[in-house]
Length: 385
Image 1 (spheres, rainbow, N blue to C red):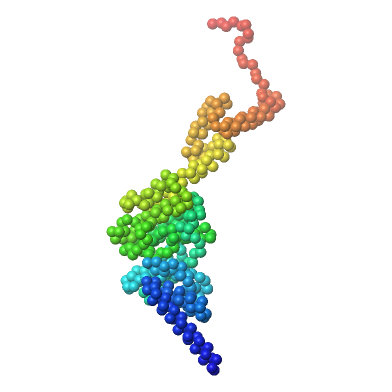
Image 2: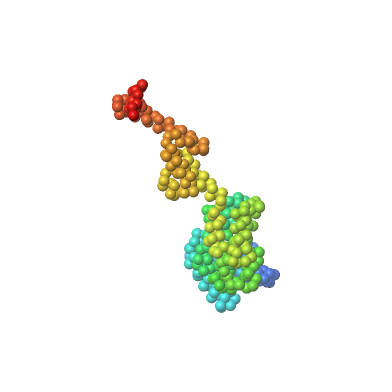
């Protein structure tokens, strides 16, 4: 009995010490999110006094802090029903209208299924917060990725992030705080746009953002629009390309970044999809693809008319030369290209061998057919009248 009372008293003392530690943490940093302070206090108490102190949001147990900002905080949490780790985003919504709006936007985000957008599993509210239970993406932010990747790899990654923003815009959602830190490339090479904590419907009021990536028109309290994400995307793309060592930018890339980050809204791309399509139109890749298509056609001989119909930019001149050669006969001058000349010579040799091996119509022997003398007057004969 005495041992049980002593053990119970020891447990109560540990709880009081842990509660006091949590209160001291909150009092020392009054601007810290209360949930962040509780998780920090629970982790410290677990390390110092042992035991299991859990901070819960709905059915989810918050384990550690991933990040915090003006729009809310992100935690690594455990889902006991599915026994997996997830990410919990807590959005500050102190008034009922704000909570209603945040819940509606979270539900819209949960209906958005796209490989380049982080998946949302659950939405709910606790105290003056709205929480989003999301996929926990283990990877590297595009800011850190750009410091070790090549410029071409950065472009590929941002094209994936742009596809995620295009999907959100198609659902009527604006991210509102896109930056290199809010796009993560996983171990599978897939980029996911994360942290939709400030996302809002098109036309809604803008609640915040990172000043460096905010469009100039947001200073005039304009409603949320996809062009705001386009501006932030263009600024982030320019930063990442320069971090990857691409300075100065090639002309075609500089034109895309300048247009996407234009001060005037009308000077930007009409849609985010148009900007992503422009990023895919790399002139170097286009000419390299044309060369790869043209090489086997030139080495193998003249292109067929089906190729001419499918690739008019490639075979129009070759087809014209082919027609001229047919009209002129076998003595037509070969093309100037060395490879085409070699192919021309090979075809000529094969044609001569086939003609030499063809049976003669007169004798049945192989070889060229004997020539018959041309009919005409006998030598020395005189013509009359």
